[in-house]
Length: 309
Image (cartoon, rainbow, N blue to C red):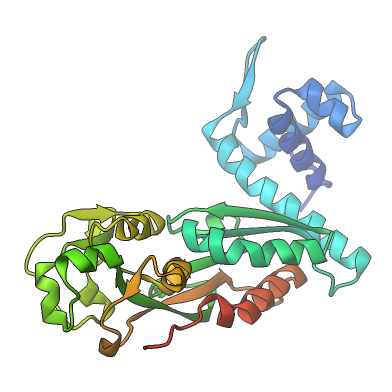
């Protein structure tokens, strides 16, 4: 390929100038960050736009903001530059040292209670590791949104380009408060649940029935309470509003303190799988390997199965 007016040998300089201009909000501010002149930044961005054949910025005499194409390109460029920076850091300090930015997405409640403490301990042990955690129950596209690792609850879809590792299974526990059971009676068989209030988990219009979790009972009436927050469901159970089926890690302390009592242990505990998922690469980075290893090592304690007694 020959060199012409639209080709820049050092393409990274154009990307860096573009990202700096987007972050700073103007060419002048970007120039200060990059220790360049405003003209140099504008020329690099201009050459980049010419090479791509699109406008990256809407410019007026008073404002500058990204076009739709510019916003899409910006998201890609920030990921590329971050990965390049991480690669340089890893090579300069030894290939086995976890360092650079690690972006992890996880469900809100198990993330806060079980996953985040493990990752924070990992970051404490490796000062050069930069940690970004996103707490969301939404299924995030790891590649599109630039995440290194995801924690996912439930059965996985067969998604090309991703690797997964089972952390363990979340044991589900049927429970209620002593006050509720004193008033309504303690169910001794699954059929006894017909006369009880069910506290159900639901999200996006879908109700997570206990039967879908291997409970050998199908309710005959609609639940009075449907929530999309596990901790609030546990609180409702503690307040005596009904019977809940919740992961053991949510109610372990309440069971230990006697605020909740386990029901029907003889039925057997259904379980929901918990996986780690990451983009499939030939050589996972040291930071990714360290995070996976730390979470796998901690998973036995995090997902401890209660005794059936």
